[in-house]
Image (cartoon, rainbow, N blue to C red; front, top):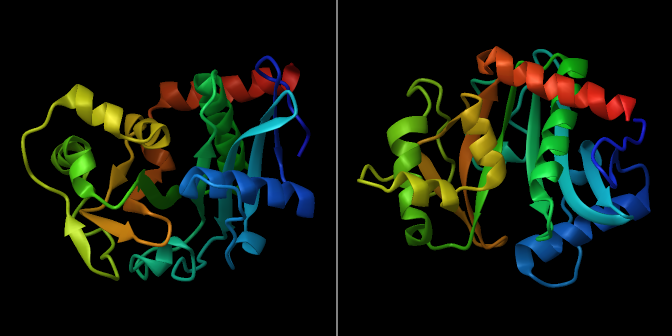
Length: 240
């Protein structure tokens, strides 16, 4: 992929070698564990690793795996936690989204979403899917967000994948919308704004010290105006 300079000093590209991958894994370890280290697993060699840099420093990484038409999704990272036997490609799995806590995050998010859009168009994916993570293992910390997801963003019952391990059902309870939105990860809010949906349970991942919900975004459900804005952003980046 050609390196782009669409917004100020930001550069967007995919990892091309061991040094790039190690940089992504280091940022992931810092984001998930709060310490220096290397977050790596057996899925890394199967994926593309998006890198967004500002003035030479990595500020965002995202792991994407492309599944072709008719390809089963059961052997994906997400498939470790959810029964995806009723789903198949073309699709793109997204995960390990890490955003360094620095200024200009809105620009970084727009750039990441525009690059995801480019890959969707290139691969003709029907949908995006993955595990959206919430930091920590205490569901009470996100009670407003989980109640909001249950009330407004839960997917169709016949399409929601069953969690493989013990999970906590999303609570059906009153919630404060503004608090709920603040508790949600930025990327999840973007998906929901494009008519994405989540599963019906929260899975606790003790190793990563996170909790996650199954998340899916059907490409055909994205509002046309939103899709056009993302593609216009991509074109502007290519011309910059």
